[in-house]
Image (cartoon, rainbow, N blue to C red; front, top):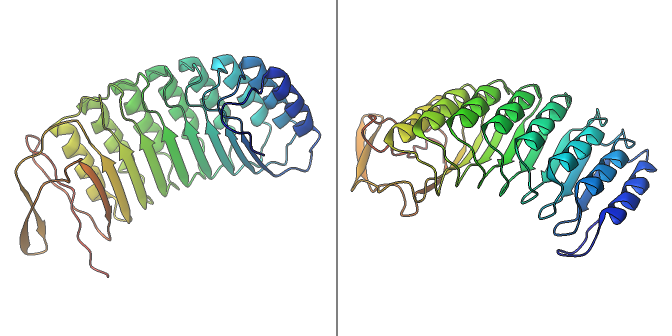
Length: 301
């Protein structure tokens, strides 16, 4: 079901939609795109009530970007969705919805009950979520023991070292995680936070795909980049890495790395500091005072 961007679906429309969903007791796949409408807390709660009656749902995609559901609305939506005990895939778009720590904390408590969840994509960009909300979200995620793919959109919030450290603590307990995407650009993340996150992620031994966006207004320097490099060197199953560091610092004129017995002299990280490399094995080491260069070594072609 699709609604065009910037329509005028209101709480009453969401209410009627919720009633319809509640009557679909055998539904196992749901996709709703109601981006850019006029749905607030009551409308989101109405949708949640409908979801709560569709207990056979295994796949849910709901795009509520650019509405105004707030913390109360997310609480109502999450409460209804928690009745879907067989849920395996959840995609929830909540970009620009006036959400704070309260909403993120409620979602964390709700997601902890999803023991069958394997794929989660949560977009909270352009809200006001801080350290407390991220810490509680991380606590819920660590309960999702079967999760294999996780995509978190957290850019342009109010996340500092404490929140990102808690996220690392939570994610290190997700031992089945294979695909991880973290959009963390334009927060207030420091070397301390990214070091703690890196220590947590290096225990996700099954990771194959890693995407981290740290660009923009974060405060990450050489120590944080060295921690990222050390983390990557520990993850032997990685096949693809994408790291965006645009705007954080100026690169050195050159860098080198060891590949077997050979020393290769290479240009620094690409001009926009975005690394996207398919790898069989990746090694990156640097002193704290130096920029870590993340490079590729391929043994199978």
